[in-house]
Amino acid sequence: MSFGSTSGGSGSRTSQRTFEFGRTHVVRPKGKHQATIVWLHGLGDKGSSWSQLLETLPLPNIKWICPTAPTRPVAIFGGFPCTAWFDVGDISEDSPDDLEGLDASAVHVANLLSTEPPDIKLGVGGFSMGAATALYSATCHVFRQYGNGSPYPVHLSAIVGLSGWLPCSRTLKNRLEGSNDAARRAASLPVLLCHGLGDEVVAYNHGENSAQTLSLAGFRNLTFRSYNGLGHYTTPEETDEVCNWLTAWLGLDGSRS
View 1 (tube, helix red, strand yellow):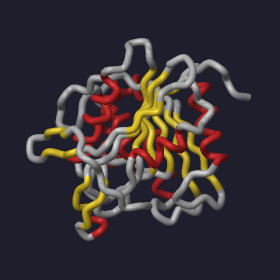
View 2: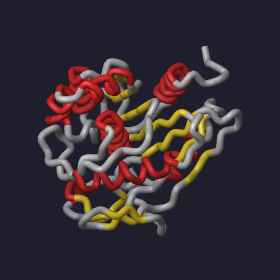
View 3: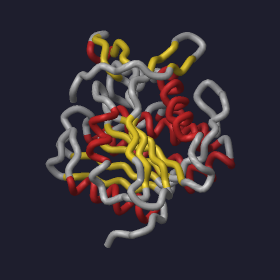
View 4: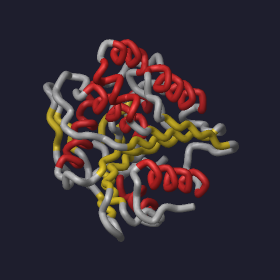
């Protein structure tokens, strides 16, 4: 992972802190616009890294929005500042969750999607910490609110997470059991999770446990793919999987075989 800095961007205010997000990169659809996906980079990266890759994918009907996270001190690096969607001290199910940071990033993602045309399907995807933020956005969609109780304004049709993990996993199942509407939304939301067995940054078991937690909580349209020998990066085999899955679940024109 690289440790890039952000340029000036729009702020997302919470009750205590203001987060300054960096530059947003947009990849316009080359064909008929049918879906818009916000794609979130990993810790220390920036939006431009992924926009360059996404532009090469054979998905002409998708508009990609690639924001850049705020630069902030990150506990896992001893307080060293880098781009991060939220603070993290340890990548595990037992580490405390930075709800304020997660909510600020989920608000930023929803704001980016909220101005899309009403007939366009919306999704969130990401890599590593970006995948964690995408999954947090999925739970906001399911409960129709952020962690702080504010209403979540957009309807999501697809979630993709590569080499990531699920924040706030300890309370998810109990929260879903308390709401029939939320359980129904969870059951119908398509989710694709991919993880390398050789991941040296976010251990494979974190990805596998996250998939199991989501499945047991009631996310019935969840697909989990593992890759032998894959470390903390992506490969053509994995991006092909993402392309085929998005084409099928979003009903995009020009289906691939």
